[in-house]
Image: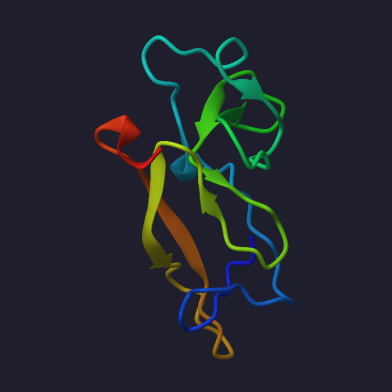
Length: 117
């Protein structure tokens, strides 16, 4: 996703380096009783727009985690996966340069889990 968002945070702006959705703060362990590869599909990046998806915590690793977000890529903003919601966007400290402020989404699990399915 593009980390530079419009003032109303409704769209991202083109021309800036993309950030991955599979960072540690945007991944989580599978819920109790669920396994990546058995209950959830696996992939390399958080690019599945439906259902749950697990990706390696580190590239090339075997420690799979569940994606909290779907990242369609380009200037499209990340979208919360089932059972998660985006509470807002946090400013990335130290990125204000030439009038550009980077943001990153902050996603949390719904409580109860089916509250926002």
